[in-house]
Length: 111
Image (cartoon, rainbow, N blue to C red; front, side):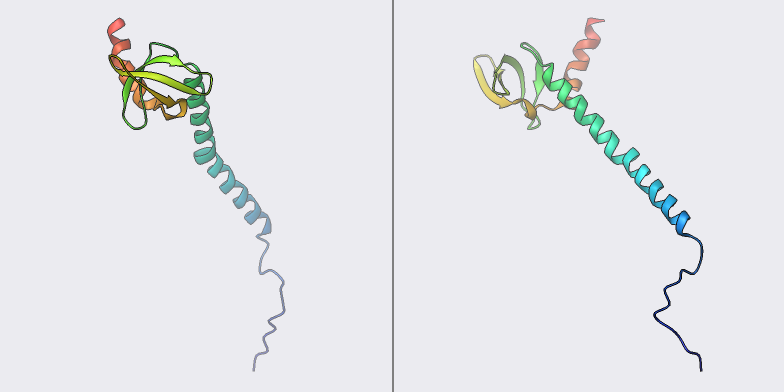
């Protein structure tokens, strides 16, 4: 009969270095494809919100279209949604993508 020792914990091969390199490569790929683009997008969104000013046409993430009437000190905006109708929204509620799409045809007409 064969005698099997279950307490023998010696590794079967010399793959310890390979596993360490593989783990490092996985972390690098995860950072390149997930963390870095998300951080870059957040930085662009923050810059976009900081540069907003009176008279700019915007679209909120809820789909409300309006023109900035006033930039408040508390991080909110007063926007005019129709002549004489104003609402107060948070700056973070503005969609960068939809606002850029709204203003893109206007920028193309100026050329």
